[in-house]
Image (cartoon, rainbow, N blue to C red; front, side, top):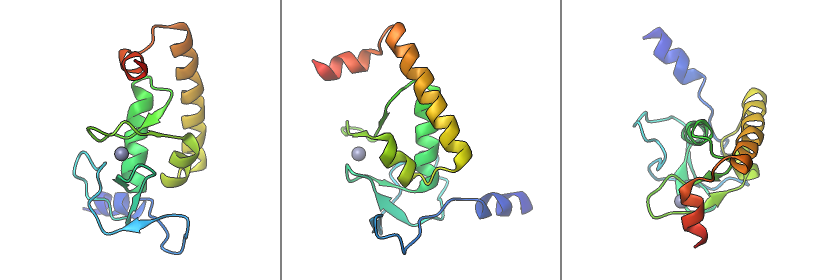
Length: 125
Ligand SMILES: [Zn+2]
């Protein structure tokens, strides 16, 4: 119980006072494991809803898959998010920023020299 409380306390939350973030009263589209993050929800540029925690998790998942770009995790939405948007909307900490930037560069280099993911070719066709 204590550990759960602690975990919740550490969650990143949007600040209602931040005028650059559009807070909405909607379900978190990117909470794939139904964790019910406590942060207010906000719109991404494509119109899908995230919380800082669900967005961080989703983007970490993309990086772990070897992606060098971020895109929306919703079916039928092929919106690509810039790192600037992700960094802002996921409220990335200094440590997370370092990890994201390092992994992005690494994945980009790997994709350049290795075989390109099939999805990239399909999208361009
Ligand atoms: Zn979307």
